[in-house]
Length: 66
Image 1: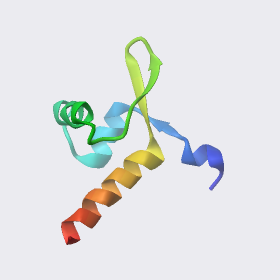
Image 2: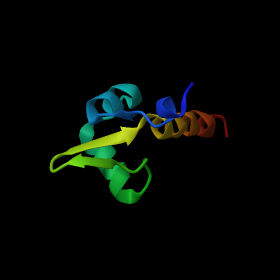
Image 3: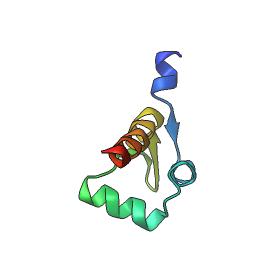
């Protein structure tokens, strides 16, 4: 995996699909500081670092076992 793969950006729709969370719930988590920070891409567009979203998902899975 190259360093560019580690920094790949994914859109909110992909994040919603990967996490099975609604846009409203993701916004709530972001506001509380409980979700990876978004990367501003334009006036009305954001992305998320794919590896950070994957790490967040892994953390949720790990918390289940605790």
